[in-house]
Image (cartoon, rainbow, N blue to C red; front, side, top):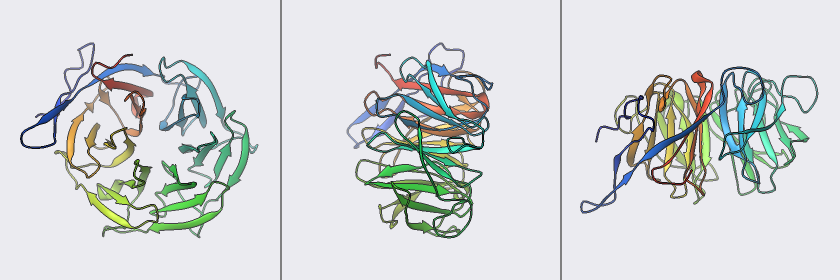
Length: 317
């Protein structure tokens, strides 16, 4: 099992790797490139620094862009630009450097602003509703907010500056935090993303510790895996995390320009990607999301100013 992507000159990018269930049986994971969304620029549907993703209540793709400060909305099947909101400005509805994004069961959209420390809540029609938190190190404040998630009526937001995960209710009330700077189990060094699986377990990309840590919803450590390196199950700056319908865990790596896939316990399943600008090639990877209904994978190929989209081999486009 090489785990290497096929040549970029192929019209369709595929990857084959073994997913070990037992000594007697093995299944195969294959992914095919579907399309790219976006290009370099500040216009509608263009990017300067694409970061993270969420899906709207009606199934559209939301993408944050840290540098031109918009949240952009796309048709997830065609990649067609639909709308955008935020952008630079002084009003409550504006943003400065949006990175993390999450959507609650009512369709409200939460956007974490990296520079200001604000978390802004919008309704499903992209109208501003509420701003909470602020820049700082006190309880309920944050520095360098990152890729967040919602579970059980709570918002979980990792912050790289304070090396912890902050937890708020959906009205913006601070509840608790966990983590703290360090390399020992349960501590963090620049946590980049925090995403839940279907069992309510929270996976945190501990970027500068080159590992994934798993926590309960109350912040109790369950386990972890990974170390610095480029082999299977090793990481160089893990950034984005996504969970599919089978609770497999997808991790983007800034340092290795690839995506690795693991089962829920951290057992390696497959990987693909290398540095470049072709299909299945990446630069400065950040966020990732999997559409649980279709298995389609949306990847923030930040250096190439695009979203690359893949699907399971044989799935309908």
